[in-house]
Length: 128
Image 1 (tube, helix red, strand yellow):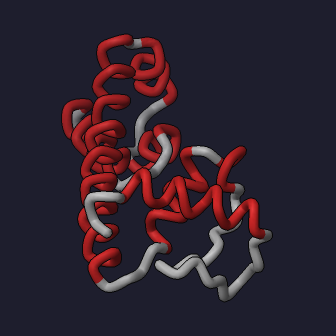
Image 2: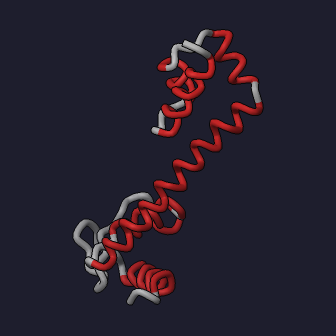
Image 3: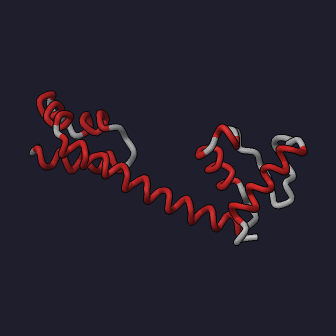
């Protein structure tokens, strides 16, 4: 298989979310080809760009799914994203909070409930 074809395979594998090393293995790269690719700033940048483009596309889909979920009253996607963006504020466990801020999985104390309610209203005031 040509080096160019291996590059195409590597690009596809990376876009699926697999690691660069896994892509090298699947493309059946030789040790010499792996060294060339690992030491090439051009390929490093190209492979990183592929990852970023795929991440952007997935985030767009997450946003669309979140908007659909919100219309149905489901706040889990927002809660999940907030817990990932600011785990020090929202924690790493997703708490199921509906519009009335009742919880199914965990009970919030009054202070925490007010903080979450204010943050939720601030972030999503145009939707409610």
